Image (tube, rainbow, N blue to C red; front, top):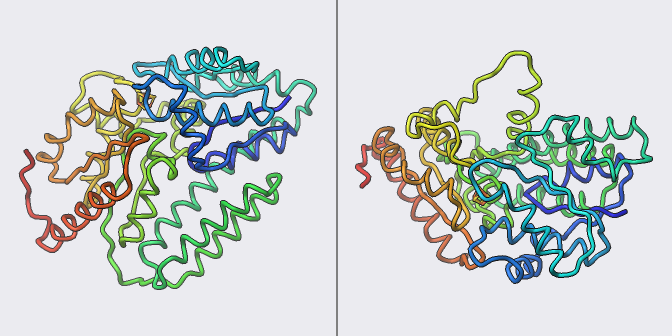
Length: 368
Ligand code: SF4
């Protein structure tokens, strides 16, 4: 039985570690393939959000290339993600694909329930490899996020422009052909070493921009038109609040602790939204924007896919947040029609404004 899975940023690396370790056969869709997005758009409802379309495109690629089992991490709550799995399964059925579709409600599942959903894939596999697979994959999530954090630090400070991009591109090209945790770990460590050896302008004080918004778009460079790389190459230090390691820590690791830890962005976000959930990362977006102002970031970039309900609600609070906390926030809405030139112009104009504002000592700005 071959399994397939959709891409979301660097998430494919830990998924690959998990499947390699348990010895499960899989089809990995190519990273950022435009054809997959086109196929997904073709078979999706017009107003479905972009993640729905790209994920469906990746599934179809996997099935066309021999996968018979789909694992999908859905969820419930207030937004459309709750019925994505069922709708995608129906679409695949109507296209006459014969696949087993397992949707994992990751927001509410215990580790035990998660393992039972994996059973068709893990039956007959070694228990010790399954446990090792989970441990190695979790480690890989944190290692990859640390590698990306280091790249964000070096990219904006490097003296010879383009060195960070070269190392990261080489890493992604190689890791797709690398098998097993040991070799992947070695590759991550050697890439980290290469990043640490880049000559940096230590005196440079970059503008600091925080990325908030919908997780899929914020974490997936092929969907957000490589926003982090663009900002880094403009000399901006980026902090992305939507990393997979944060998500795993919030949804699984913290839940296992005997004491309940506070979710800081969530607590902060409730200043403007008097409810516990508006779906997706809506409250997290509001909270992270406030915390970014309190932590002296120069600006916030808010990313979300066209028609994403939770982020539309979050956006409604921004004029108040900008005025109260004196931080500029720019929203970028992305869909399959987003053009690179207009996108880049807006980013450059925003960064110019932040630089000017810093020169003037973060002058108060009244946002209407
Ligand atoms: S959070 Fe937004 S983009 Fe993500 S599934 Fe929900 S509505 Fe769609």
